[in-house]
Structures are given as structure tokens and as C-alpha cells.
Length: 152
Image (cartoon, rainbow, N blue to C red; front, side):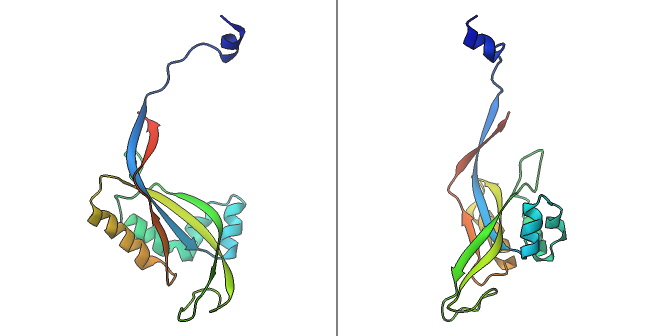
């Protein structure tokens, strides 16, 4: 055995993987500064305590096709950040003022739907999210099909 092979240890069989075609749904959701700070400090329970997230969770729970991983359901990921914007004349901003640059503490929720889901099914999921969103112009992304990889 060469020294490089010896350092790696015994040869192992690569685990079987499963590749699944999905579309990502990413939702940018405003939250209070305290929620962002608590989450950044590692307090994930704040997600269950923040009243501003109730409608988003209702929309996701009403959409069983979103976040379906077989053995796990209602799967989503959360990222923390901020979103900047300037409200244009004619807008009615939830945060900030018309003509002023604003920053919003924002969480990004990402979930997935099977790429083979019918367009009307995906549209219903998106409509629930948009209806629940507190912003005048919600920011919701729907990706092209991509592959998720897991154990087979």
C-alpha cells in the first residue's frame, strides 16, 4: 500500500445516491429586528414565536407538495439577511417612506417542489405565499428545475 493510500485508510464503497429533479421556491420575508438578532444568535425557536411568520407557515402547511422529501415533509431552510429598497411614488410601503432608501431585516425561506408537479399545482403554492405576504410587492423566486442529491 502506498503511503498516500495508507493515509486515506481502507477503501470504502461509495454510498448510493438518489438524484431528484425539483424547483426551488425562495421567499423573502420581513421580520422584526429582534427576530433577526435572535436567529443570528442561534435561537431557532424564535421562528415559532414570531407572530409575523404565522401567515407564511400557514401558507406552507397548506401546500403539502412543498417541502416533500418522502420520509420528511414540510422541509424548508431559513437564511438571514437584509433587503434594501426605495419605495417609488405611488407605492404604499409597509416599511420606510416613499422616496427614501430603506433596509428591511429579512429571512429567506427556501423549500422545494417536485419538478414534475403540474404548473397549476405550483401556481397554487405560489398564490398562497403571495396572498400571505405582508409586502405590497412580494419577492418570491421560482427556480428552473435543479437536482437535489440525497442518500438512496
